[in-house]
Image (cartoon, rainbow, N blue to C red; front, side, top):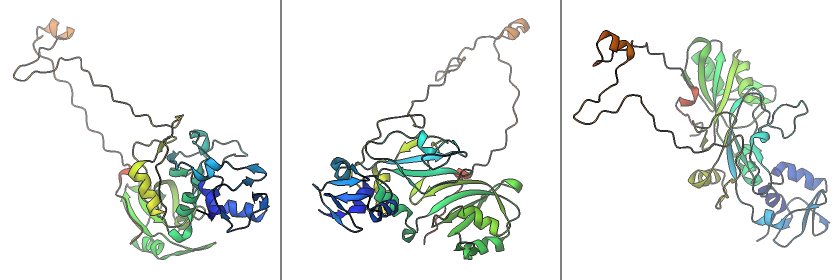
Length: 323
């Protein structure tokens, strides 16, 4: 079955749909020795070259669908090569089975949280395309007073230098004073949009973390700088949300610095023998007790004062921007 050339190349991970369309317009893509045009139909058996280099037929037509979830820490950049020598997210990822990882959107240097990466450029394009209005949910810590009127203003829309923008939803999620958190949802991917919206009403963002992209919620076990493969029903749901069909995904075999390894927790051991039903376990006497002649009883320890529970923005209720 013939398909549009930019769609096939994007799905095979040769680049994003937009990038490939630019290369086609520049004459960098040929089919059977002839320069390709936007919308040309490609079928199995055609010889495709990108910038003079042949494209693998296996990669074009039998591309395994691989999707990773990565928890980007503050201080990493989302480019492949940084001229300033800063660490990039791609240095923490495993090698894909075929093609290369395409990032679904970006996070700036000082923003942490969920980034979806895939070898399927068509999936990446669908998830990022403005017409799909995919939810992006963030936890935001702000400095400054936020009134109900200001929150409503952010819902209704604020004029920025590149046009009007708004939060599809905004909810308080806990904290006090300088540690006040909100959950917000946007449905487009403009540069630094969340920060600029808050700055437009005179509030400074002190911490920003992406928790959700579309139907994918960042798992609590996914720690900063680590990745995990998205598989099974979760992968099918992501393709369905993007309006695409999912095939069986190939497992990521290679593990690296960022991999989550499933480990069985070690059983807890105690210096005291466990009690048996209906019988008291005999406890060894402490040396201080022996001197006092009270080896049959273990003195009670002091009761420690319970610490207040630390607020965790990732455990706050999820919100949905769509109706």
